[in-house]
Image (cartoon, rainbow, N blue to C red):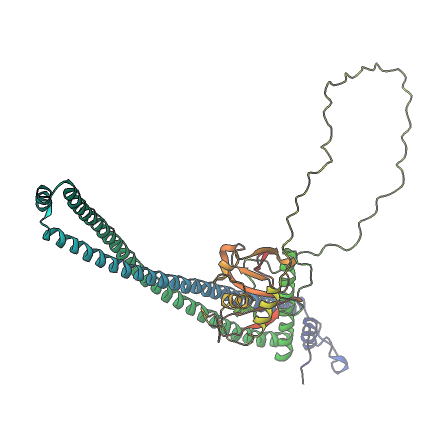
Amino acid sequence: MRRRVVSPLGVTVALLAGFGLFAGAAVASPTIPSDDDIAAVDAAAGETAAAIAALEAELASSRAASDAAGVAAAVAAEEYNQAVIALEEAEAEKAEAEAEAAAAQVELEAATTALGELAMASYRSGGDLAQLSALLSADGLEDALAQATTFQVLGTSSAQAEQRWADADLAARTADERAAAAVEARAAAAEELAVAKEEAEASAADAARILADTEARRTELVVQLAALRQTSVEMEQERQAAAEAARLAQQNAAAAERLGVEEAPAATAPEAPAAEPGDEPSASRPSQAPTQAPTQAPTQAPTQAPTQRPTPTPTQSPTVRPTPAPTTPAPTTPPTTKPPVTTPPPPPPPSSANAAALAWAKTQIGKPYVYGAAGPNGYDCSGLTMMAYRNAGISIPRTSGAQYYAGDRVPVGQMQPGDLFFYSSNGSPSGIYHVAIYAGNGMRLHAPSPGKKVELVSMWWPNVLPYAVRP
């Protein structure tokens, strides 16, 4: 059975009753509380209200810390994904450079062999002296010309062989240097990946710890609030859950309004915004919704004509000086003609690829979030979107930040199912840390964060960039 809620006024009445004010007929001479007694009761009630306000403020503060930790974990995860791509590129460069070095070495060996054979042939022919002797002993002019041509060919081949060897030697040394640099770059990329993975895991662990601490502290605060309000813990939990849902809905609606989203945001708050990269409220954004515009129509201007002023009869006609007409009359008011407004071209209509990508992504719902994964058993946020569009026949980059530049820009208020939209930690593309697929009807599909699974949930507008992308 739930305990009866007692208001601060009830506390005051109960305390005053202790002084005999409401003792009734059982007391012959009721004691009237003094001013000090009344002041003490009022102070106790005020302290209770202040304690309740302080506890509720701590609840909001702890939630904000958990939200910030979720954003930090998402940023670290995006940096890890970028490190994964850097390592893959370094490994590809290393393999290509080593293959080029091997081919250059083969060519160098072939050029060395050819040069050696020509050197041996020149040695056997006696070099330049043999050529001169052959010309002197030639049987006639025709024989001398033939032998000269032979030695000329031999000399030309030798020069070509030497040039071939020089080129092959330079190419081999260049390829070896490139291969060595690629090996170093690959090692550096592997080291950066290890650091990024450690930081991502540490950020995720911090976010999980802060979330757990927040929930534990929340439970303590709810118990304290229930005691101060003299109600049950269950009733206070319901009260706080409703207050939190209202706060998140207000924050979501305010963010949607700032982004110019015409459709009504989802009425339900995200299931666990603090630990989810796409769900977290940002501490840098105001949580209070903007003041609602008044719905009352403005007061109509009076239609009554103003009272006409009587024209006084002057006693003496004033001397009127004619005003000289200006040669070039200057406009007294700015021109009313407004410059034409350049309307940006509308985004292209969604193609069949949008629908195909969204349909494929829906088949992956329930698979776990895995750092740097692009399927088939798990995904990170950009791995899911990349594979969704690959299965729709469109190639897009691997990371969230690169995907922002992989298509036509679309205002988020005009998104269509299948478009990609992005969350940023600083309100610009440089701070992108999460990407999701718009699923229509105020829903989104994404791989949220470690410990969660690919899901189809309500839109969460805070931290969303103003433009989506239609690949």
